[in-house]
Length: 98
Image (cartoon, rainbow, N blue to C red; front, side, top):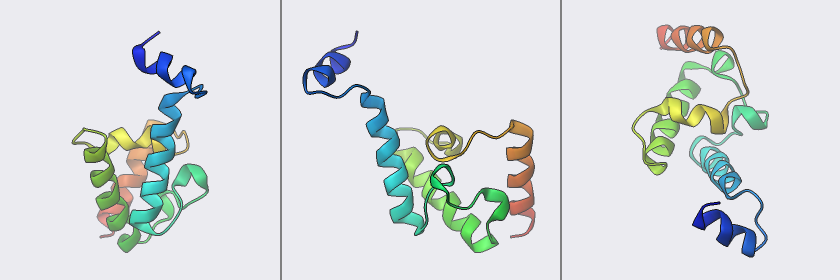
């Protein structure tokens, strides 16, 4: 058990990584104005070009907040589980309409 896990357990937190998920989902809503897809917000395939642009910018900001430089890192925090082919297809469609 890591030091973080021990400290979290000591104060009653069972899954400290869940805090990271909650932060990213709350911050996404602040940045975009709508819920993350995992919380019932629009999926990439249902977004307008303007929404897609805002989604992209939010994900890049959140990726940096997490210490990364790729928006794909945010997928596990924000998206419902979708097959990779469907996600890639949806993203290409959204890009081609902008």
